[in-house]
Amino acid sequence: MLKIGGIIFIFVGIAIVCDEYFQPALEAISEALDLSADVAGATFLAAGSSAPELFTSLSDAFSVCPASMGIGTIVGSAMFNILVIVALSCAVAGQSGASLLIDWRPVARDVTYYTISILMMAAFFDDGKVTVAEAAIMVVAYFSYIVFMMFNEKIMAQCSSKVHTFGFTRPRCVPWWRAGILFP
Image (cartoon, rainbow, N blue to C red; front, side, top):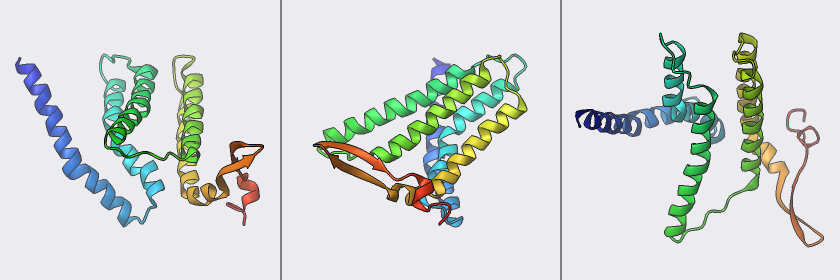
């Protein structure tokens, strides 16, 4: 019973520290660096929400007897965040009478990057070890996402939300190389 009380105490303490100090600190850093909401969300706020998973994985990697949490823990955590958080947000919005308008463009962007990252991770974990070069490739892929987010508003502006063709509604997006995003 004492262990359960201790675990509850730790969870409440983490929640208080995160809500009262950590989140506002990350927002203040983002504002001080004059980051757009997209870039702040892809960097500091994402790192803040993933910090527990990061530190758990690091402690496992450098432990004397690692528990080998591995790819299942990382992917499982991400799937929980994607599916459960989105579902609960929709459920809460639905009960309050509000409706959520979800734009397909950010969803398509994030699903594409997530799929690429999972494929890279699966390929790199296939032999049971991750080399420094493979780790560097994954970090470069993350920085490519940050660079994409720096140009997100311009790229999304080139994508129209709806195009009516033959009575169907289809998304349409001008390719970035023709939109003058990087090379005006």
